[in-house]
Each structure stands twice: as structure tokens, then as C-alpha cells.
Image 1 (cartoon, rainbow, N blue to C red):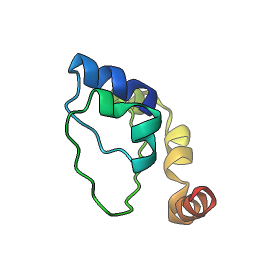
Image 2 (cartoon, rainbow, N blue to C red):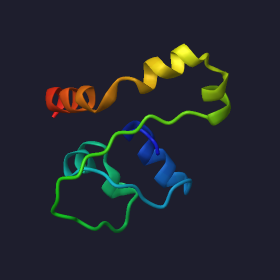
Image 3 (spheres, rainbow, N blue to C red):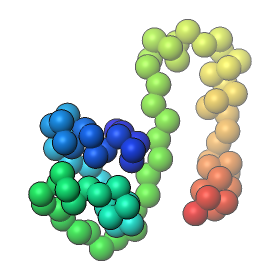
Length: 84
């Protein structure tokens, strides 16, 4: 998935055919210039992900892996509440 600054160029170049985007950035990023069609879905669904190459993950020592995965659900809820 691309960050919003990359969406316009990647749509223009045909690297991607589409992407889920909130309503607000469609105008400010001028996506209407390169996306001929869109589907408006009246919902609020936010997702965030951290993606890492498995070889890189496996190269980390166990204590680093534990520190990353040990954050837990309560911290995720706390982070989410603070951001959203």
C-alpha cells in the first residue's frame, strides 16, 4: 500500500488501479484527475498495519522481537484512542 503522496503518481502510471481512500484526501490530492471512477462507501473503517520482510524479522534477536510483539492489546487500544 502506498502513502497518500504516492497514490496520484501510481494511479497515473498504472502501477495501481485503485486504493481505499478517505473522502477528504480525494480533493486535496487531486485524485479526481487520475481516477476516472470511484465508489463512495458510507462507513468508517480505519486500518493501520506494520509490514516487514520476514527475513528482516527473523534477523532480529529474540529480545527485539519480544519487545515489538510484547506491546499487547491494551497498548494498541490506548494508541488507537489517542490517535482517533
